[in-house]
Structure formats: structure tokens, C-alpha cells
Amino acid sequence: MDEPTLQTLKVNQTRLLSSLHHTCQWGTGTRWGTAEATETGMSRLSLSDADKQVRDWFVETTKSLGCTVSVDAMGNIFAVRPGREDGPPTCAGSHLDTQPTGGRYDGILGVLAGVEMLRVLEEKGVETAFPVGVVNWTNEEGARFPISMISSGVWAGDIPLDRAHGLKEVGGGTATMKEELERIGYLGSMPASHTAMPLAAHFELHIEQGPVLEAQRQKIGVVQGVQAYRWYTVEVVGRGAQAHTGTTPFSSRSDALLAACRMITLSHDLATSHAALASTGILTLHPGSVNTIPGRVTFSLDIRAPLDSTLDTLEAELKSRFATIASKETTKGLDLAVSWRTDSVSPAIHFHEDCISAVREAAKAVCGSDSLARDMVSGAGHDSVYTSRHCPTSMVFVPCRNGVSHNPEEYTSPEDCAIGAEVLMQSVLRYDRLRYLRSGGGE
Image 1 (cartoon, helix red, strand yellow):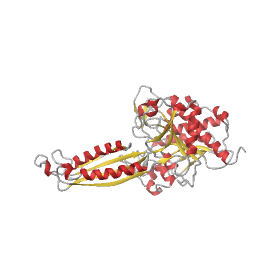
Image 2 (cartoon, one colour):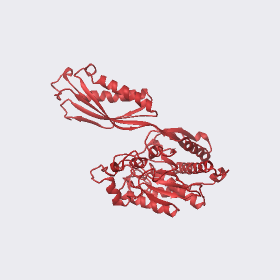
Image 3 (cartoon, one colour):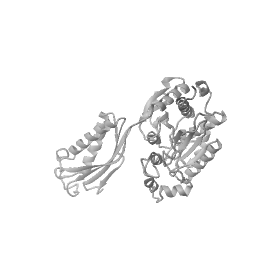
Image 4 (cartoon, helix red, strand yellow):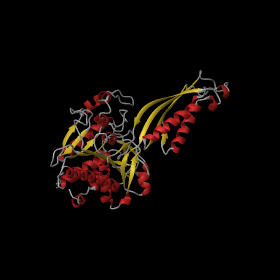
């Protein structure tokens, strides 16, 4: 497909937003504004009844647009439109599940933009060189079944199928992923595997989930990759039993909470010095009595940076400095013991240059200027992390108001949704053209 033909293909902004809001009737969450049909958040947990309803809509809609629909053993749905030649499809992909108090755009926009791409191709009678399609990945959020991106992880071969199928829901229920896949009718017969369902490339449109594009008044983030992150559980234990707050002088205390607080503060300071990030979201202390000195504390630690080497350095410094904090020279009391458990390691991901170039060229063509797009690294994980391990991948970011996501007030303007959808469509078609030329076509 030549450049002039590409430029004639435009998404229908009204149709895109109408479809997006139509699908948000399934799993509607907290109201944040006065507009009856559009100003509510979403609570569409994976494999819930609401998730089944939107999946059924996705399958019916994509079949009506000439797609063959396949469902794998993790409930991932692949809607593929044929091309002139056989081969793995070039896909747009994201997810339809949300956080319990989520919004209408995280994940949902990426899938609905893919559906709009199929509609444009169908109404214009466009025949691509190779198949193109849309993927809905299961349980990307990890909100109901507590491993994020679990189903793309199974597809990539990084997470065992048995572990995923046996994962139990959180929030008081007892159902497993396999049981819920069976219940809603989306336990597919096709293996969840990149060998059973190979992709030629994967493009994902997503809200930025940060404030940069909005602050810089730019329209498109050309995503280079995803920053590395590591999760730990740190335990601080006092030597000896917990003691009474009113009878124990500082010199005789073994205050695990005091040490933990200093460690958490230090993690922020050291991360800042390395241009990294650090956060603690869980803090648990024992015995939890107002007049007893805490003898044991555990806390989570999440560190992130664009480079793995930065996290190597930061981790080593944190471990060394935490040990110093635990010593009696720092606490002015008794020694404490500190131990680390590594819970998760996600290396830095660098997307494929061919896909990055396709997004960059598409952004320039759609926006009319290089100045409205910027190269970015994603601070959060996405299904594209796992697809990038087995096929060329990149992402397209669009602005979101105040950088807010995972919140009912998550919002991207209709104009920015349409611009992002058009860049996504053009990226897929530009990659299809590249495949055609590399296969010897056009010579």
C-alpha cells in the first residue's frame, strides 16, 4: 500500500467513541461526572459476567467484519482478517478487563481502536498483503487473578499454563482461572502459545498513564520500550521480644518500625540519585499494639528504571545501606536483622526498530509534524512486554487528563482517541507494506 493510499484511510471518530462507550455498558463503575452515558468509570474484572458480555460483542463484531476468530486455552481472543498472502497476522492488541475502580480507556481504547481499523479496511475494501487482526488479551490488569499480563505471559511461554489455570481469584472468592474460563465459555481448545498462534508483529495503543504528553501539548508517544522493575519483600526483625513503650529506654529498644521507616525514606533518596523510582505500597507490623514496640516489620519495595544496570547498582546500594540502618550504631538501640525476598523481576524491554519506525512515520503523517510526537519509555507493564519476546512490537501512547489512570476519572479526549487510533491503523498497515516489500513484492 503506497503513501497516497494510506493517507486516504481515516478513522471515524464518532463511530470509535460510540463503540467504546457502548461496550462500557458491561461493567459500568463509579460515576464521576454528569454525562449519563459516558462519565462513569469501569469495574469489569477479568472473566466476570460483564467480561463475557463484552467478549461476546467483540467476537460477533469482528466476525461480521470478515475475521476468523480463535480463542486459546487462556481465553485470549484473536480476530484475524485475511490478506492476499498467507502468514502470521500483524495485530493490534490490548485488553478489555479493568481495575475494580478503573476507567474507560486503559486497555479498552486499544482494542476498540483495533476494531475501528477493521471497520475502515472493510468499508474501503482494502486488501492487505498479509493478514491483520486484533487481539484481546485476558486478565492484563491482574486485578481479579493476581498476576498481571498472565495470559500474554502464557502465550510467550514465560508462565506455565497449569500455574495460570490454577490461579485463584482475590477478594473473597475461590474460583480459579480455568473454572471461570469454562463458566463463561472462553476456555479455548487452541494452545495458548506463540507457536500455535504466531504473530508477525504486535502494536498496542494505550493511554500514557502519566502527565508528559499533556504537559508538553503533544499528541503521540512513540514507545521505545518498557522500563525494568523489581519487586521485593523486606523484613526487619528486632533481636529479642517486643517491649513496652513506657518502660524501655531507647538504648534498649529493638524498634523494627523505626528502622523500616528510615529504609523506605532512603530508598526514595537513592532512587532519586540514580534517576530511578522506588515505592512502598504495603507495610505490615507486629504485634500492632499502641504501647508495644514493633518487633517485626515487612514492607514491599518496588524499584524501576529504564536500564537493568541501574537497578543492579541501586539494589546493591540499598542492601548495603539497609544493613547499616539495622545496626545499633544507627538505631541507637539494639541490632536488628534485615532480610530480602525477591518477588518479581521484569527486565528492561527494548521494542523492535521496524515497529518503532512504523509508529514514528505514522505519527508524523497523521499529526503533520514531528513536534507533536515524542519518543518515550513506558513506566508500566503491558501485554506488549511479552509479545516483544517473540515478535516485533511497539506501542502508541496518547495523552490522558492529568496523567490519571486506574481511576474512574481516567479520560482521553475524543480527538486524541481518534488520532491514536489512526496512528495505530497506519502503523499496522505500514508494517504490512514492509513485510510485502521484504518478501519480494513490488519488485
